[in-house]
Every structure is written in C-alpha cells, then in structure tokens.
Image (cartoon, rainbow, N blue to C red; front, side, top):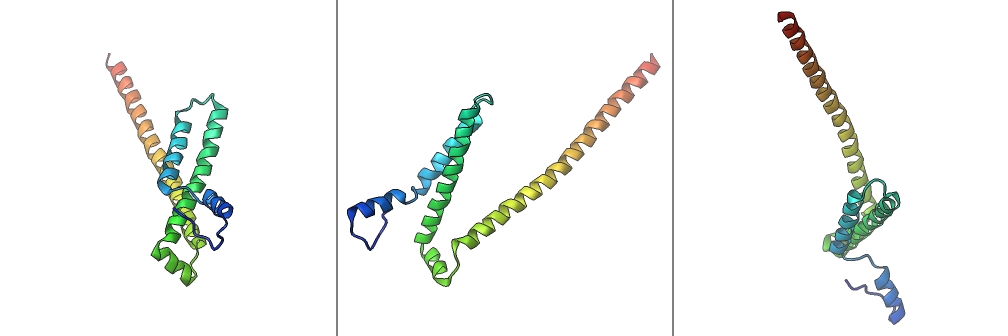
Length: 138
C-alpha cells in the first residue's frame, strides 16, 4: 500500500510509509499468533502471558487501523467521508454491538447455569431416593 503525499521529500515519504498501518492480512495473522500464544502459555509464566496480552492489544489496534485504512481507500469509504459520516460513528456502532453481546451472554449464561444446576440437584435427589428405597427393600 503506497501512501501518497504532496511532499516529495524522500525522508518524509519514508516516515509516512513506516507510520502507515500494516496490511490487514498481516495484522490479522499477528493478532491470531499473540492470542494463540497467550492461550498456550502455562499460568505460571505470568510475564510471558502478560507480554502476549499486551502484544495482542497492540495488534488489535493495528488491525482496526488497517481495516479503517482499507475502508477509507474504498469508494464507499470515500463517499461516506464526503457525506460527513466519520469512522467514529462506525466505532460507536461496533462498541455498542460488543457491549450488547456481552450483556446478552452474561444473562444467558446465568440462566444456563441455573437450569444445569437444577438438573444436577434433581439428579442427586433421584439417586438418594433410589438408595433409600433399595436400603428399605433389603
């Protein structure tokens, strides 16, 4: 991805290229690597796990920047920018959707725990009842 600039200074162009977000596919692969590394590390390797978490956060930001750069480079992105719809609106929608999915997951998980717990208690009661009946018969 080449960054176009009105400045023809080679040093300035090099700095702009270095500060540009990485290609989206590379950023996604790096993010997946750091997420997988954190999951694979044992719990007692706290510093390595902390490093993997920090790197995953950094690569998540780079993935967002690469997605934004790709979107802004598209004709739809340029059209929306021309209409005054910024990327802040898209980030708010994404954040709201993540928050909503977290809340739904927390509520559903609580209900699932309740149902599974009820079945477990019911199963224990049936086993105890069967043991009492068998003990009475013998």
